[in-house]
Image (cartoon, rainbow over all chains, first blue to last red; front, side):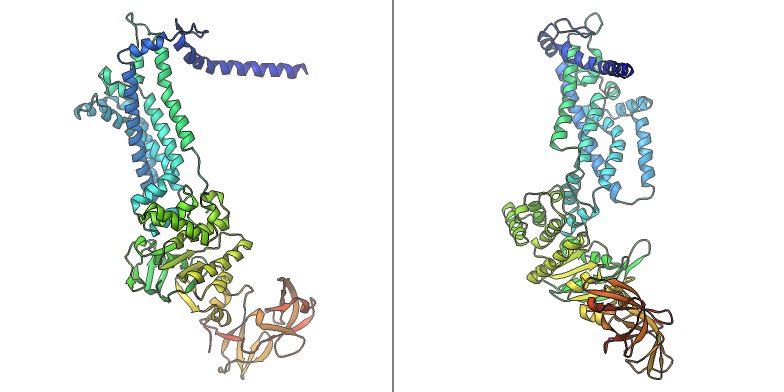
Length: 272
Length: 352
């Protein structure tokens, strides 16, 4: 009996520690922005909104968030559109070595945009004159995400029954209409997944924008965060908490919006 | 409304399978036509070639006066119902039914009006705003039919229209389908592997095997006088008795018995004797095949009695429930006059 009680106490204590470990950074993110003297520790805040004003006055803070939104939206749109088209084609057209191609792409993708390719990518973009270009950077980020996105989406495309397309075709739909009216809506949960996934990936990407966007005015939030220092060179704890909070909002909002509006699930359908 | 002419049509798959092999067929305007056969006989490929979803390798398909062999499916003015119905899960019933009109860029009001009218005529009026996932199998089938008839297509193609329904519903849907086809009067071709379905629905049946037609005729013809042993075997819910026999002095020696031969054939001709269990009656005496009752299978209103003949041949006889014989008793199966069919032993074709 006492053994059981002790075990319950042990369990509870263990999970409390684990929970605290994950909860403390979140609580810091919720409290530090509104604390008059924010530190790296967690404490009950001395309420103020002055930090927000300071952050808004920072010359690059808001610009970088807008940059992030532009960059990530671009990368997300490029990835989703191209991956959807490629996955559809790969799902429907039989070419020899199709699966091998997909696996090789997937394998290479982790190399291509990783640290190993840092220098070649920089040189290539420099020669193309795409340094400091949001579009160029978005292209590179999208390029790195495409193989994985195609890989994931192909499974969703494979699951769209051919009879749906054939049915639309018999009724006179053109290939474009078939894609827009039938394939995309039916594969929508997969596409929603790719939208969120690619946006989050791009949002958190530090290395590529750091390399390719040298002008501080065009850098996204993930890069700017590194430069938020005060005159003495130590972390600017007035701006960082507020900035971190602002930085985390879009991803959460996107997730909630997509999940509610489009749902990562399938709408009905029948056995076949 | 149009007739379909198929001329020396072959459809060969890239792997070399001749799914349809030099087939000629004319389906009359307004006819309800069944393509019947076991799986892999090419019936679905033939239907899909008529629809344009498979490209004919050689030969021609015409709908009405127009040759459509190389015409896109969407420009053939055909409508098709797929085996899985292929209803778009993200559209409501109303949007599904109106989809062909949406593709044809008809105004929204027209789309809605047609969807409502068609749905009402198929008693789907109360389901217009539902999605396919919220419907029963029978309702989904009717939505698929509604979508197919919403445009006035020349030809209606149905791929195994009833096979996804459970047995009870299938009978209702069958009656419904036949009435719908009568009302619309549209040339309809449907594919089935279920001979009962083909017999019940069709005006004419083409029984297919390995890419060709083995028999073409009305359900009655196909049932009463199968043109060969393949069709004889395939048609009928109780299998036809097909027994080896030999002609001997104008008599037919079969399963240890002698019967008058229905046709004059030279002595010693080896034949396959075919007779349906439904066309045999069981007596204690009479000229027929005698054997011992070994198995009795209850079919509801009737029973299928299996007679074991002295030479080991098994003969099936259908009797009414009150005439069921005792197991182990001796009985004679007497064919109705004109119901005994003789098939060539060599190639299985009907003699005479």
